[in-house]
Amino acid sequence: MIRSIEFYIDMIFVTAKVWILDLLSRFLPDWMVVFASIVISSVVILCLGPVIMMYLTLLERKLIGRIQNRYGPNRVGKWGLLQPIADGIKMFTKEDIVPANADKIVHLLAPIVIVVPALMVFLVVPFGERMTAVNLNIGLLYFIAVSSVTVLPIFMGSWASRNKYSLLGGMRTAAQMISYEIPMTLAVVPAIMMSQSLSTNTIVLAQVGDYDLHWFIFTPWGIVGFIVFFLCATAECNRPPFDLPEAESELVAGFHTEYSGMKFALFYMAEYMNTFTLCGIAATLFLGGWQGPFLPSWLWFFGKTFVLICVMIWFRGTFPRFRVDHLMGFAWKFLLPLTLVNILLTALWQFTSDLEAWFWSILVLGISLWILVKLNRTFVPEKRKYLLVD
Amino acid sequence: MTVFGWGVFKGMLVTLKNFATSYFRKPDEGGIFTVQYPEEREKTIENFRNFPFLVYDETPEKIRCVACGICERECPPKCIHIEMETDTAGKPARRPAVFDIDYGLCMNCGMCEEVCPFDSIFMDHAFEVTAVPISTNLNKTVLDQKKTKVSAERAEGLVRHKEKLLKSNEYFREIRPALASAIDQKRKAAEEKKRAIPPLRHNASDGPVLGRESTGGQAQPSATQEPK
Image (cartoon, rainbow over all chains, first blue to last red; front, side, top):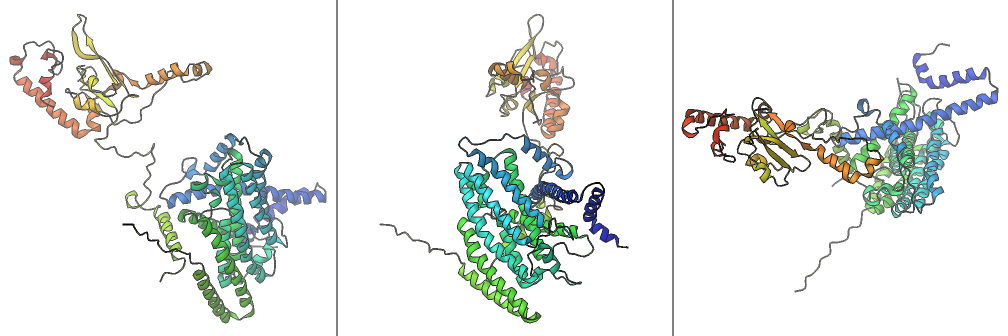
């Protein structure tokens, strides 16, 4: 069988795994080979997650630095490439402080529990062609369900710390993350409707076009869904401008005020891994996942994901923090109706022909956006006039 | 009419522009203006002043200071300590035997430079001043006596003695060229003036150092004060 070199580069990781399993199957029973396959996939994911997290911190600090006319870390190693390792060593050697009145078990559990869903969602992310760790037929549902668990450990940590700032941060997290989960889930619905599947692999395959770009983002419902999903993803992983749970200027450090050393690092790790997976899923759902010409599929996936992450970092470098009521209002009064309209748009797109569909989509979208903007106008009370008594 | 959300894009464009231009713009045009300190240094301006040092002319023996003690008296935090050298007969030699400045106490005011009539003490450009404690191993016994011993060591570490304070006139010319050349000219003019009529004003001539040794009297700087 003769195949092009691109194919082999594309399949390099898949081939490597198959080769290892082939080797093992010569002197191991069948059930052990299955077990080995699971172990290989999970080890790769367990290594990938933290490594990605470490270098995301470096990327973030570099980009933010450039935005603010600074260099960012450039001392440890060439271009500061060893900075994450130095940070890791620092975190490991820090003293672990537990407040005297804290609920010690829950305080310990929270940072451990938060990493679990962050790593679990890696299972259904399609890193490349045939590179989904588990091709679940309910992949997207699994992703949404597992990633929404994140709110629990954050609240655990904030409650167990017995600190008012932690608790306030935890309350905000609960409010924010639960609110933003609703538009996020609804924003995903059009993609599910059009691909008629919950499996992330099938959703990517539904976006395959011959030579034209058939990605979902190039449709009116796709772009609205993508923008809503991306904004909600930013809010879900508590990144600026939605970083109210850890607002430095108001709440010291929010829910992780009372955490130090490795426990603190675990919170950070979960946050950055969530950033990565959410961007990965956004790329999968709307940007065609691992598809793309010339380059190997996994490179396309990581490229798209990192572009999205850079946009998130760009957000952080640009926007000030939301006010609490604006934050909630944005989710409930703007994003939620918009996603509902978007689902309607998808149905319109499905049942009308090409040009007509564009016309109706833009019309409906324009009218609904106009109405939403008008309705969402913030109420500004008239300036009071105080009459001076003579 | 403004489009909803337009401000968001405008804000993002600003940061994007900053990000992109940080790679190629020069510091004064809006690029990165960080100075990578240990490798790069900003050029120190001439009037930058830090800790005082003593100027000698050709060799460290030809020290300009005559141990008059004016700076010692004028120093607000009293960080200068001077003792005059005496010869075997007990006669004052008009040069310092001891000249200590406690950099730990000095507040960099520059009074000593201003009051010195002999153009001897000036403020330096060196700002990387460190104290080296005599014993660096802080074991338990040392920590027990922390209050007395360690602080004493640290205080001693920042005291600069005469040998360390002495710096050549060339160095002075290098760091503060304008002031140094002006002072050099004045000193030269004063010397020539003095050489023109030396025997009339001063009878005693017992080995003058820079022609100043012969003035007699202990704190009588009038002869050399006129050039300043």
